[in-house]
Length: 288
Length: 335
Image 1 (cartoon, each protein chain N blue to C red):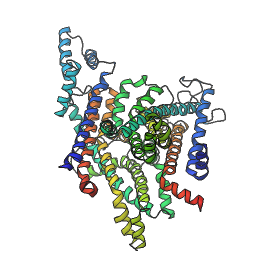
Image 2: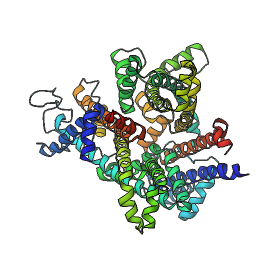
Image 3: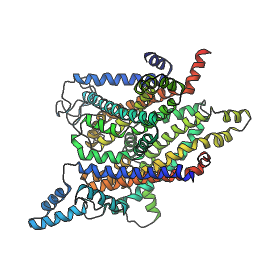
Image 4: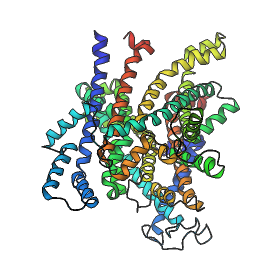
């Protein structure tokens, strides 16, 4: 695992960039705990000050320090995304393994449900749900909600991998030598499935953060909790741009762009790393 | 006929399952809501009007229950919902009572369809052609430049691109109007002026959609074609001296088209959800704006109507696609 990481870091500039950005953002999110102000409180600092040595990213019209607010936003958005990713991974892996390994009727029923979730227009449905819970939707519950709806495509990917693994020699050897189904799946299949889980997790994280921004911009999440989406929401709704308070709106927007770019590059690079054709090429390069 | 049974039947079952899940979700979700829509409406009436006879209130209550489809047991309500939906009746809007939801949707639909069909088809065509070319000549400087631009644009949330365009081309350099689908107070008599006015207002939203759409199609097409280029038949064609253009269009792009056609149907189906963000950012009078205002006013019937319409539209789009797929892909036809 560590070896893979170092070789990816050394060989792929896109991975290096994505990795560095994510490490910086994670560190920033961790620093949010040292914030001198409660992020929910208003009027803790003077209003509408431009960036200075005291307030690194200025202050906003609600009397909050944009720098610390942004750190909290990163932290909350990442926590939300990680919850969404973990819960959707659990559903996707369970559905994918079950459908792929058992086959038959279970496979057909599960895949029909999966396909339905792939086809269903998620944004209107999520809007319908969030508009009911509105301000009571915490970071955790939003994460779980996005997890419940964001698993379908990845379940399909995992299923097709399991389908091909099931037909390989080593599966038969394992079954014939009396290995239990659980052990086959966890000892023999996981090394193949785990990279898939990582690659799809990046994409899913991207999707979850983007969805949160969309829902927050529409005012459909708890607006007191600072996330990237609610920061944009407040800045836009307070006419930050017209008033010339560019540091307020630009901070979350720039952060968003960096997170998205980083995650996208990471997923591209991991996917390429997993592509068997590229693997063969790489081996040949090492040999030659 | 094996084709009918093995290919067609599962697709039709899938179609029905999608609509069933969508309809059931739409049925369950509002019933988790803590506020009672009937109580809400009654409150609104009593706030507006003066005193009402208790018996009159009771009568209004009964009528409202029936209108909102909240009469009887849960099971009865559930069947009543399907009965109404199959007739294409989504009930009245709560906020703009008694206007049926269907009427409101019909007013907004042409705006959205006009904007989104044009931009989707346009960006699909441009993105695919450019993506194919960029993959084929991937070592040239300009191809790499195009790829880098697309790679930066694609992951940025659409909302931010729309906002940036609005800031740049409507506030900073005011070439285009800031909001709306047409100038306020313009009469709807068909004339060149009206057409130009509508086009001018649609330009910025269209541009933002086209930029993002083109970048997305570009990236997927580039990936598809660059995977195909390693195939034996293309290498063979190159060795045999077939011209580059011929290989690119007839050998590579044509074979990479199938998944892209599927993608096109899916995104055309998405149209009926309205380009929510586009329309809210640019205040464009389409389905998205309608959905947004229904969110703000808590108009659940309207939200449900739009959601269900988009479920049905997408499912139908996918079904139609599946039905014409055998004509595009000979492998399915002869299976």
